[in-house]
Image (cartoon, rainbow, N blue to C red; front, side, top):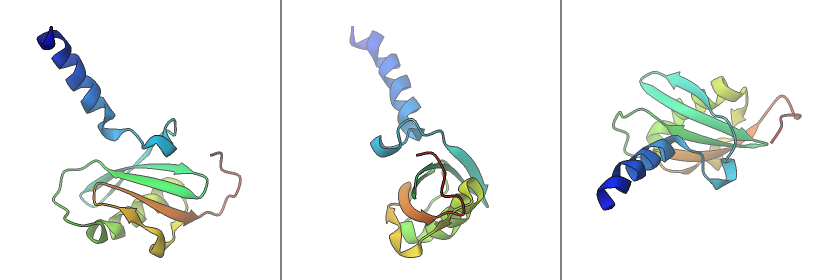
Length: 105
């Protein structure tokens, strides 16, 4: 029985690799590639979640913030607030200032 459910569980696990966190469930990501980094960017109101999809070695959030900042701007048109980055080099969140205040959450 384990052998039959094993492949299905693996497929579900892999499918969840680019799923937003609970706060961002249902938000369709915008993909942005900056240099060698590819990101899925999800915006909900004045918060953005950035999920790094590429596999290049990055060892800290600080190392990826410059490219992630560019990805947020490219994907949303919003400007990240530099002091608000949280998370790690794989998935981070940031507060943003946006020119359009009527974005659906």
